[in-house]
Image 1: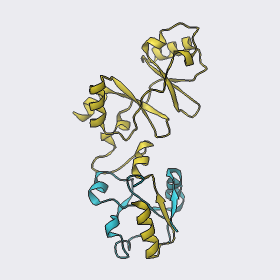
Image 2: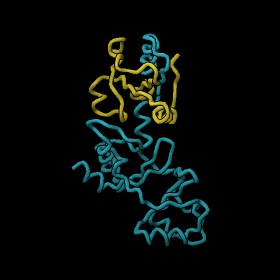
Image 3: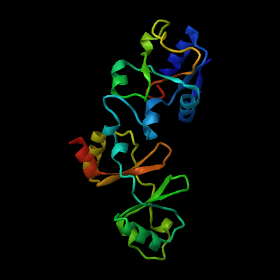
Image 4: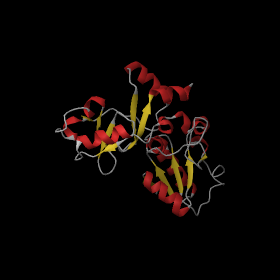
Length: 68
Length: 157
């Protein structure tokens, strides 16, 4: 079950657990701006193939623009 | 969108999935850096003057006036112990009677912008409202600095 988290928890997961940031917005929005170190996997392309580069042992933090 | 992405990842078999629901709007509004073609340099936070003077509600007005003048400023932001903006002392407020408290002299609740505000939008607002500067605060109200119109106009060319 995915866990909703806030900014402070994001920073903690990145610093302490080597969390992986994934922006799920379309590529043009990702290229416009994104969180440092984030990779882009647009929601529409999210599947077993496109997520192969993610480490399943580490936290995965997904985000978009805001509460959409 | 991110809740659906998080659910999709869980359905694929990921077990450590977290959803940063407030997203990059929240990140930028907190004054944290963003990467990409727009970059932080096009945002208000990158150009805010961070040495703008601050004071507390309980400080003597005369003392604040002296400190502000010595720092070559003509304004001062009243903040609480967390740095959250409570009010602003402008030029005329700083010149008022010494017996006034900061709370009496300040303009409470000044309009602010977030560090992630786009400079083009901010400059348009400043021109429309004839503003010479705007305070920049994080989404929880903490002062980042003061964005001067001249700095913003110079930055956008």
